Length: 140
Image 1 (spheres, rainbow, N blue to C red):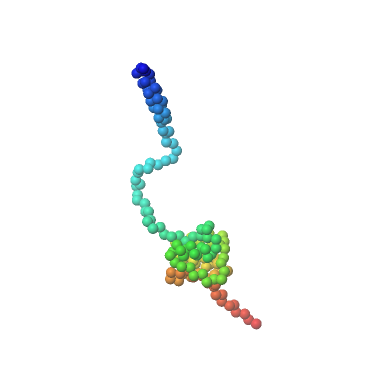
Image 2 (cartoon, rainbow, N blue to C red):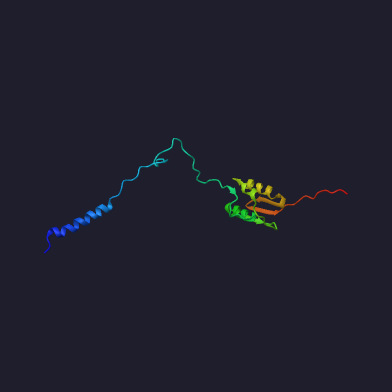
């Protein structure tokens, strides 16, 4: 028969090994720039619940029609594209940033005037047509 010492000895040894495995070094000291989480500012800050939509050109907008389709969808409008051509976007179009659809469309009209593109906002539609060019007077 085993003695009590022979039975308790493995239990104590196993317990000591398990306790040693649970030991960990202390947490390192906080260094660098940090701010406490739970503090209040001296002044209130405005947090808009519905931030204004910004009309801009995104990398996914590959063409003028694609850009206007996205703007129409985001504004819950429809796009009525009556022009017989579509146009690629070019570098100056990337500078279009406006909170107002009319201002954004006006910027596009100015940028695509040489291509005879007319863009108008009519009710709940964005309408794209070929711009009517006034005939020039010729003298003979």
